Length: 430
Image (cartoon, rainbow, N blue to C red; front, top):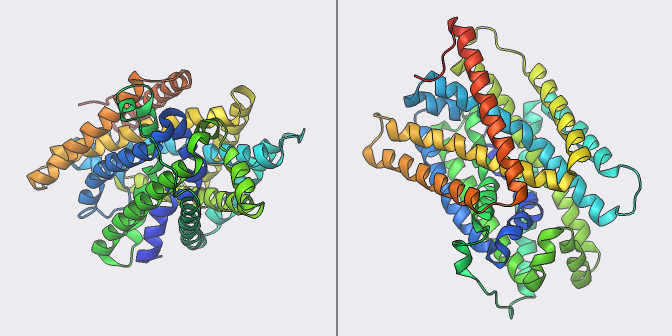
């Protein structure tokens, strides 16, 4: 099976999912940055792009489809490579239920507020079942669907952004740049980093590309630049459109639909909800596709297993974990608060994976010095963003931090088990 340049591009683009970011992560960023949301988005894109450069550099020579752990193996060794792969798998298990929780919350909060049945839970489980068929059935079906929906949501976000700007041309946005050094601005930046975190998912399909490595690498850059342009345009347009309503919007994203209905009529909110659901489904498909490929390649290229565990067993385990997270989240914090906590946790864990890749590039002796310096630069910017968010955190962030520490400890313990099982003794760090 081989994939074209366009399919690889939208595999990465679909794993970022601009339309879902528009209604899910931008309001979350607005909680911490207010009218500075577009500034936080731009800084997030810059940091994410710097952290993405080591991926581009490594992908010039590495096409095995194992992705991040394969890049770490390059100069940090097998132990940290195994750890990186486990961490990626662990935080990937959180992504799909997080998408389901927000989508269900958003639809219920606008259309079914007074419904007494557990609509949000039922709706999320239905979405999960609809997801299972194409992922389990055929990779070709998945990638074609991702490409089609990716094109659709790009057009939808651009049209929506132009529509919002067209009626707010006389509105001036007051930026408070002093908030960059105070308050919770860097929490917004960390959420923004998460917004671009899926841009590298095409690397897990590189071993099946039919366009050669040059075009395969270009697909990453095209997807990343397209995503950055769309999200910065959307954040600027949304900030201008909302004005003083950005506060209420940050506490309840569905308010955007009420404002849209009052200004444009009932059709636009329906289209936004439809775009959200298509986009959420697209992200789940593309992320599942990347994760399943990474899992297969990780076993054969990193762990060197002669008899890899079947993908279907892994996918069945993924679905069971998703259901468990949905049930636990709804009974403890509720879907929206759980969405905030998990989003921040995934963002921090994503930073760890990219720090490992940046460090691996910096220590590599096979690349030019200027390329190695980019690994160090990406590492420093990621660590600065992470430190800024921790130093200026909210109460929910404390829960995210605990969950993040748990994931890191799980990653270490699982890695120790793998090495003890492979070598007959317990060892992790050199």
